[in-house]
Length: 87
Image (cartoon, rainbow, N blue to C red; front, side):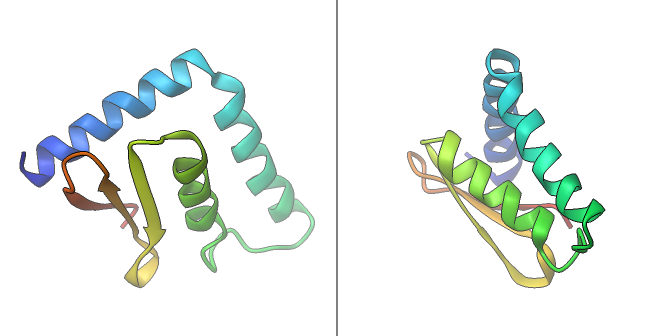
């Protein structure tokens, strides 16, 4: 499985999760934007960190961490393929 296929697998599973549980992403995004309203910047890795936490908490076949320059590095725990998103 190449990086593009690993990314496609991730997005397919992400869409499935959100389709079955839309409240999860709604709550996560609401929290990010609420922090912005009270003065936190959405840069400084707040959005990236929230996305990483969302993946680690809800997508058990994947592990994520904030990488260099604000990207999110995701590893498929089954195939061990690693790819970056958000940048």
